[in-house]
Length: 285
Ligand code: HSE
Image 1 (cartoon, rainbow, N blue to C red):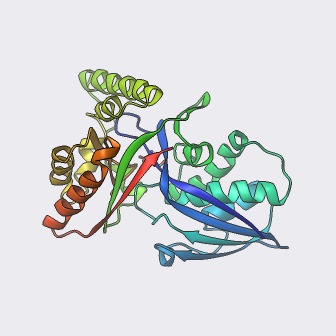
Image 2 (image 1 turned 90 degrees about the horizontal axis):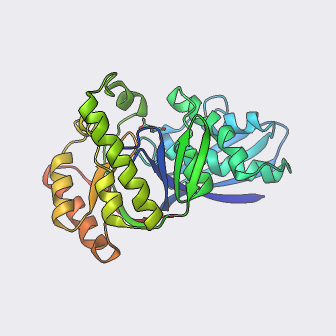
Image 3 (image 1 turned 90 degrees about the vertical axis):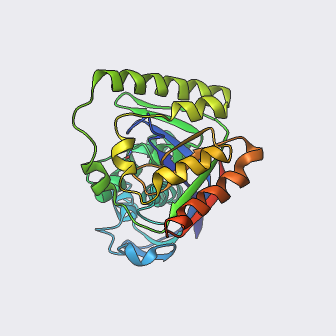
C-alpha cells in the first residue's frame, strides 16, 4: 500500500481569479492506494458523508481513469468539501501522485497537473488547474493557458472556515461577465503587487495585492459576517483579507507574530453573527 498526503490550497487570492494559487501547510488529505482489477473508493474524515464513493462520480476516480491505473483507493479527508480550500483538488493531487508511483507511470509533478485537473472537471464542470497545481507543486503558482509557473514562497496565513457551505458552481454564477476598466486596472495592479510580494516573501505586499474590485465583492456577499470578519482580522494585525477560492473560507495574511491573534479575531467575529468556525494557523509553502 502506498500513502500520499496532499495539502489544501487557496486559489484566487482575490486579484488572481482563476490564475493564482497557494499550497497551505494544513489541512491536508491523505490517500492510500493498492493495485486492484477495478477502481473502488472509500472516503472517511471531514465531510466524507457528502462525497460520492462511486468512481464515476468521484474526482479520484477520474484521475485513476486518466492514468489507466485501477486501484483500491482510501481517501482520508482533512480538507472539508465546499470550503474554498480546494478539497477535491487535494484528493485528486494525492491520488495522481500515488497512482503514478503505484503503476510506475514516470510522470513528473508538472505532468500530473492536467491529469489531476480531470478530477476537478468532474466536480466543478471545468478543468481548472488553479487548485491542483499548488497542491502538486507547493508554494505560489500562476496557471495560464501557456502553463504553470511556481515559486517557493513562504507567507504566514490564517484560513478561517465558517460552518456553512458555498458550492463552487454557485459561487461562479455570481462572477460578473463584464468589468469596468478602472476596476480591471486596479485589480491588475493588485495582482502584480501580490506577485512581487510572493517573490520577496513580504506579507505586506501579498496582503495589499489580494485586493480585488471585480469578483470578491460579489462572492463575499454569500458569506454571512464577511465584512465583520475582515475588519476584525485587520484590527488584529492582518496585512490582507480575501475570500479563499470560491468561499466560504476566508484567508488572511499576516506576520507570524500576529497569526494567533488574527485567528482568534476571525473566529470571534464569525461567532458574533452566530456562525461557528475553525481557523487554521498555517503558512503558504
Ligand atoms: N478559482 C476557482 C473559483 C476555484 O474561484 O471559482 C476552483 O478552481
